[in-house]
Image 1 (cartoon, rainbow, N blue to C red):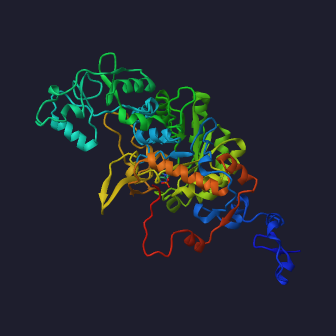
Image 2: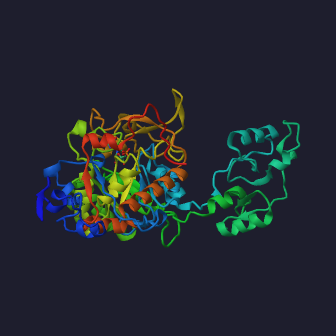
Image 3: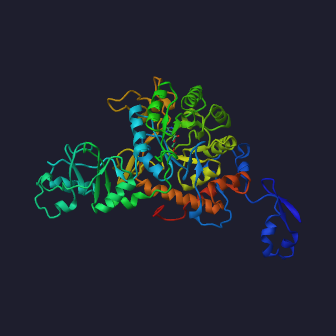
Length: 549
Ligand code: IMP
């Protein structure tokens, strides 16, 4: 047997007789012979991420080689520790950006097993109110039902039915929530009613079945089932409407087996971002009073005296009741400084975001694959999880980020444009779009708070240390993304896609993936530019890229 030198210096054995005499090795011994190679096919994570040899890499620069499958994709566990004290069922986080995460996104991300980080480009009161709504959310209760007054007409009910599809409408004194409940108008009440101008007080049902504030979802569902009504209004002691429960939601909403909930309160887990300036301490107090679980220190360059002081302050003030995600960092040295003062997780990424121009303007940053690997490799030694933030364009990137040592991915553009992201849809050249902008875009840095709330208009600017600059230098752009529908469908697609990725690699859980990457069992391969073209759809005259159904 002789050995061939390969490009990477590995010794690959060949059997001279196999080539010269046309006699072949016994196929039944193939597994035994593959072990004769001095190292497995491909490269270990350490080898591929050696930046002195390969430079800085990002997700598209490499692939993971397939392993051995002896389990089904649906059995793959995606449970992951995203901070020192918090474990989620899915490793997904939504970015603290004002076109990505407000109440609706945070609630739905948590229901689907991830967590949303509420942005801070608003007043402390507005942000605290969003946190409060997430913590108060009880799956199934509609807390903002459309109501009408007794003096509205049948035509108004038809209009609401056409616009929103609702047919059971509560009638309250002033047509709003927290006003005395007077009746309900259901589809049956107006089914054969021909005069659209009839007032609702003449058709509404006043013989109501109600439940009282404080009722649990389970109890309310039981009352709803027994009542045989379509809707169950929930009222407070004064008889005011505080919520509504719908029979149609009963089945579809009941089960979110992956939901991220605090162990003690059973409420949804909520994260929110703050800056690192003195007034952010007051903001944090309001967020903590509203029930915050995780605080994200939102800075484009986290290795600063401001952030270090803020971490020390938070740990001293709130102890271990509040986990801190510090960052952003891309090097071991930055990571070390934040770990040392008490960071419970690190957010990794500088310049990799889809809306980001930091690398172009500031000349600093790091290719995201290398950044995630180098920081995770270091931070994981201290039990500090790493969150790969920015640059995630598809499910494959998620699998790669996690294989490189991240415990979770943070997504902006992938979740922007969904029903749950803030903002209205608009049409442009036939496409249904939503706005998506970088928090370092001039657009975001110039945003002002709602009237009547306390001042903090420049929070986006603070992320980039430019709130005092006479000239604002943008580090992001403002644009639009295509409508992606609801994350109730999109996140399950990400979950299933990721499970299939892990199945191909041969890892039955994220924990096993990490272990097998560390021990060199999971192998990687660099992709040339031609290989990247080959790996995409090519050679077709036209095609439609539908991702899930
Ligand atoms: P995406 O998922 O690739 O769209 O990246 C989202 C991430 O980009 C966020 O989580 C932030 O870390 C980062 N980011 C947000 N706004 C800006 C910006 O204006 N400039 C640079 N990075 C940004």
